[in-house]
Length: 227
Ligand SMILES: [Ca+2]
Ligand SMILES: [Ca+2]
Image 1 (cartoon, rainbow, N blue to C red):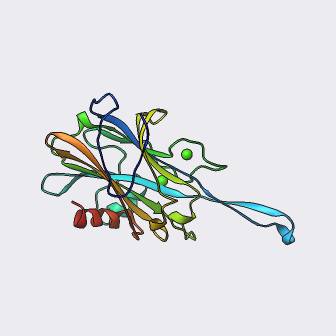
Image 2 (cartoon, rainbow, N blue to C red):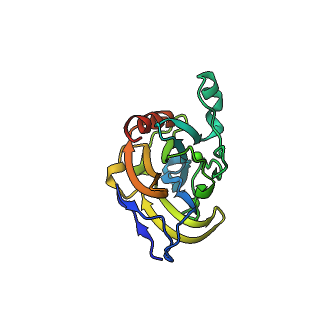
Image 3 (cartoon, rainbow, N blue to C red):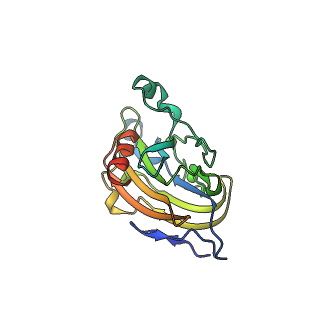
Protein backbone atom coordinates (compact mmCIF):
# COMPACT_ATOMS: atom_id res chain seq x y z
CA UNK A 1 0.00 0.00 0.00
CA UNK A 2 1.33 3.44 -0.76
CA UNK A 3 1.70 5.80 2.16
CA UNK A 4 -0.76 8.69 2.21
CA UNK A 5 0.92 12.03 2.96
CA UNK A 6 -1.75 13.74 4.97
CA UNK A 7 -2.70 17.33 4.42
CA UNK A 8 -4.64 19.55 6.78
CA UNK A 9 -8.32 18.70 6.84
CA UNK A 10 -7.94 15.53 4.81
CA UNK A 11 -10.40 12.71 5.39
CA UNK A 12 -9.01 9.25 4.99
CA UNK A 13 -10.58 5.85 4.78
CA UNK A 14 -9.76 3.42 7.53
CA UNK A 15 -9.30 0.56 5.13
CA UNK A 16 -6.48 -1.74 4.25
CA UNK A 17 -5.52 -2.15 0.61
CA UNK A 18 -7.51 -5.43 0.71
CA UNK A 19 -10.63 -3.35 1.46
CA UNK A 20 -10.98 -4.73 4.98
CA UNK A 21 -11.65 -2.22 7.76
CA UNK A 22 -8.52 -1.05 9.54
CA UNK A 23 -9.32 -1.58 13.22
CA UNK A 24 -5.93 -2.22 14.82
CA UNK A 25 -3.28 0.38 14.23
CA UNK A 26 -0.84 2.73 15.90
CA UNK A 27 -0.53 6.51 15.86
CA UNK A 28 3.11 7.36 16.45
CA UNK A 29 5.27 10.47 16.63
CA UNK A 30 8.96 10.40 15.80
CA UNK A 31 11.12 13.43 16.64
CA UNK A 32 14.64 14.56 17.35
CA UNK A 33 16.43 16.48 20.09
CA UNK A 34 17.81 19.89 19.10
CA UNK A 35 21.53 19.66 18.40
CA UNK A 36 23.50 22.87 18.05
CA UNK A 37 27.17 23.74 18.02
CA UNK A 38 28.63 26.44 20.23
CA UNK A 39 32.20 27.75 20.34
CA UNK A 40 34.38 25.68 22.65
CA UNK A 41 36.39 26.83 25.63
CA UNK A 42 38.24 30.10 24.89
CA UNK A 43 36.65 30.07 21.46
CA UNK A 44 38.64 27.03 20.38
CA UNK A 45 36.82 24.40 18.33
CA UNK A 46 33.14 23.64 18.68
CA UNK A 47 31.09 22.03 21.35
CA UNK A 48 27.96 20.07 20.56
CA UNK A 49 25.01 21.11 22.70
CA UNK A 50 22.02 18.80 22.92
CA UNK A 51 18.74 20.20 24.05
CA UNK A 52 16.03 17.70 25.03
CA UNK A 53 12.73 17.99 23.23
CA UNK A 54 9.78 16.68 25.21
CA UNK A 55 6.76 16.26 22.95
CA UNK A 56 3.65 14.69 24.46
CA UNK A 57 1.15 12.75 22.40
CA UNK A 58 -2.28 12.61 24.04
CA UNK A 59 -5.90 11.92 23.22
CA UNK A 60 -9.34 12.56 24.63
CA UNK A 61 -12.51 10.53 24.11
CA UNK A 62 -15.83 12.27 23.69
CA UNK A 63 -19.37 10.93 23.98
CA UNK A 64 -22.32 11.76 21.73
CA UNK A 65 -23.24 14.67 24.06
CA UNK A 66 -19.84 16.27 23.52
CA UNK A 67 -18.46 15.46 26.97
CA UNK A 68 -14.97 14.17 27.64
CA UNK A 69 -15.44 10.73 29.15
CA UNK A 70 -11.92 9.32 28.95
CA UNK A 71 -8.37 10.39 28.07
CA UNK A 72 -4.72 9.57 27.76
CA UNK A 73 -2.16 12.12 28.87
CA UNK A 74 1.04 11.98 30.82
CA UNK A 75 0.81 11.12 34.55
CA UNK A 76 3.80 13.44 35.03
CA UNK A 77 1.44 16.31 35.74
CA UNK A 78 -0.52 14.48 38.42
CA UNK A 79 0.78 16.49 41.38
CA UNK A 80 -0.43 19.67 39.68
CA UNK A 81 -3.66 18.10 38.44
CA UNK A 82 -4.63 16.72 41.84
CA UNK A 83 -4.02 20.15 43.40
CA UNK A 84 -6.47 21.59 40.90
CA UNK A 85 -8.94 18.69 41.26
CA UNK A 86 -8.53 17.80 37.60
CA UNK A 87 -8.59 14.26 36.19
CA UNK A 88 -5.22 12.58 36.63
CA UNK A 89 -3.05 11.52 33.73
CA UNK A 90 -2.91 7.89 32.64
CA UNK A 91 -1.50 5.88 29.79
CA UNK A 92 -4.48 3.76 28.76
CA UNK A 93 -8.19 4.27 28.33
CA UNK A 94 -10.59 2.61 30.74
CA UNK A 95 -11.68 0.11 28.07
CA UNK A 96 -7.96 -0.61 27.27
CA UNK A 97 -8.69 0.06 23.60
CA UNK A 98 -6.04 2.78 23.43
CA UNK A 99 -2.65 2.34 25.07
CA UNK A 100 0.22 4.82 25.18
CA UNK A 101 3.80 3.57 24.96
CA UNK A 102 5.07 5.98 27.64
CA UNK A 103 6.58 9.41 27.96
CA UNK A 104 9.67 10.22 25.89
CA UNK A 105 11.35 13.37 27.20
CA UNK A 106 14.32 13.83 24.93
CA UNK A 107 13.67 12.89 21.30
CA UNK A 108 16.26 11.04 19.20
CA UNK A 109 19.82 11.99 19.94
CA UNK A 110 22.27 11.57 17.08
CA UNK A 111 19.72 11.66 14.28
CA UNK A 112 16.50 9.98 13.25
CA UNK A 113 16.35 6.38 14.47
CA UNK A 114 13.30 5.70 12.30
CA UNK A 115 11.21 4.65 15.31
CA UNK A 116 8.39 6.56 16.90
CA UNK A 117 9.16 8.06 20.29
CA UNK A 118 5.58 8.07 21.54
CA UNK A 119 2.90 5.75 20.23
CA UNK A 120 -0.77 5.19 20.96
CA UNK A 121 -1.94 1.70 19.92
CA UNK A 122 -5.58 1.47 19.02
CA UNK A 123 -8.02 -1.41 18.84
CA UNK A 124 -11.27 0.10 17.55
CA UNK A 125 -13.19 -3.10 18.31
CA UNK A 126 -12.55 -2.57 22.02
CA UNK A 127 -13.60 1.08 22.19
CA UNK A 128 -16.50 1.57 24.61
CA UNK A 129 -19.78 2.16 22.80
CA UNK A 130 -20.14 5.38 24.82
CA UNK A 131 -17.30 6.89 22.79
CA UNK A 132 -18.28 8.85 19.71
CA UNK A 133 -15.08 10.75 18.85
CA UNK A 134 -11.41 10.48 19.72
CA UNK A 135 -9.13 13.51 19.30
CA UNK A 136 -5.35 13.20 19.11
CA UNK A 137 -3.10 16.12 19.93
CA UNK A 138 0.52 16.96 20.52
CA UNK A 139 2.10 19.45 22.92
CA UNK A 140 5.64 20.61 23.51
CA UNK A 141 6.52 20.48 27.18
CA UNK A 142 9.17 23.12 27.87
CA UNK A 143 11.53 22.52 30.74
CA UNK A 144 12.65 25.45 32.78
CA UNK A 145 14.85 27.75 30.70
CA UNK A 146 13.72 26.26 27.39
CA UNK A 147 12.07 28.35 24.73
CA UNK A 148 11.43 26.73 21.37
CA UNK A 149 8.58 25.79 19.07
CA UNK A 150 7.96 23.16 16.37
CA UNK A 151 10.13 25.03 13.86
CA UNK A 152 13.24 24.48 16.01
CA UNK A 153 12.81 20.73 16.24
CA UNK A 154 15.02 19.06 13.60
CA UNK A 155 12.32 16.58 12.59
CA UNK A 156 8.88 15.59 13.85
CA UNK A 157 6.61 13.22 11.97
CA UNK A 158 3.35 11.59 12.77
CA UNK A 159 2.23 8.38 11.14
CA UNK A 160 -0.51 5.87 11.31
CA UNK A 161 0.56 2.29 10.79
CA UNK A 162 -0.39 -1.31 11.23
CA UNK A 163 1.79 -3.18 13.67
CA UNK A 164 2.86 -2.72 17.27
CA UNK A 165 4.94 -0.09 19.07
CA UNK A 166 7.97 -2.34 18.45
CA UNK A 167 7.21 -3.44 14.89
CA UNK A 168 5.95 -1.40 11.97
CA UNK A 169 4.17 -3.68 9.49
CA UNK A 170 2.54 -1.29 7.09
CA UNK A 171 2.52 2.51 7.15
CA UNK A 172 -0.91 3.79 6.20
CA UNK A 173 -0.37 7.55 6.30
CA UNK A 174 2.12 10.10 7.52
CA UNK A 175 2.31 13.74 8.35
CA UNK A 176 5.39 15.95 8.58
CA UNK A 177 5.12 18.68 11.22
CA UNK A 178 8.43 20.46 11.06
CA UNK A 179 8.40 21.24 7.36
CA UNK A 180 4.93 22.81 7.58
CA UNK A 181 5.42 26.57 7.85
CA UNK A 182 2.01 26.96 9.53
CA UNK A 183 3.56 25.51 12.66
CA UNK A 184 6.25 28.15 13.17
CA UNK A 185 5.86 29.79 16.56
CA UNK A 186 3.44 27.14 17.82
CA UNK A 187 3.80 24.54 20.54
CA UNK A 188 0.63 22.56 20.23
CA UNK A 189 -1.10 20.76 17.42
CA UNK A 190 -4.54 19.22 17.18
CA UNK A 191 -3.69 16.25 15.03
CA UNK A 192 -6.73 14.29 14.03
CA UNK A 193 -10.04 12.84 15.02
CA UNK A 194 -11.44 9.37 14.83
CA UNK A 195 -15.23 9.30 14.86
CA UNK A 196 -18.15 7.01 14.30
CA UNK A 197 -20.37 7.51 11.31
CA UNK A 198 -23.00 5.03 10.14
CA UNK A 199 -21.54 2.39 12.47
CA UNK A 200 -18.12 2.79 10.91
CA UNK A 201 -15.01 4.56 12.14
CA UNK A 202 -13.68 7.48 10.09
CA UNK A 203 -10.46 9.44 10.36
CA UNK A 204 -9.93 13.15 9.64
CA UNK A 205 -6.54 14.83 9.74
CA UNK A 206 -7.07 18.18 11.47
CA UNK A 207 -3.53 19.56 11.59
CA UNK A 208 -4.52 22.71 13.49
CA UNK A 209 -1.60 24.45 15.22
CA UNK A 210 -2.26 26.41 18.41
CA UNK A 211 -0.21 28.56 20.74
CA UNK A 212 -1.24 26.60 23.84
CA UNK A 213 1.51 26.21 26.39
CA UNK A 214 -0.18 23.49 28.41
CA UNK A 215 -2.10 20.44 27.21
CA UNK A 216 -5.07 21.46 29.38
CA UNK A 217 -5.54 24.50 27.15
CA UNK A 218 -5.52 22.26 24.09
CA UNK A 219 -8.17 20.02 25.65
CA UNK A 220 -10.33 23.06 26.38
CA UNK A 221 -9.85 24.29 22.81
CA UNK A 222 -10.93 20.94 21.37
CA UNK A 223 -14.01 20.86 23.62
CA UNK A 224 -14.92 24.43 22.68
CA UNK A 225 -14.27 24.38 18.95
CA UNK A 226 -13.90 20.88 17.54
CA UNK A 227 -16.45 18.68 19.27
CA1 LIG B 1 6.98 13.31 26.12
CA1 LIG C 1 12.62 8.22 17.01
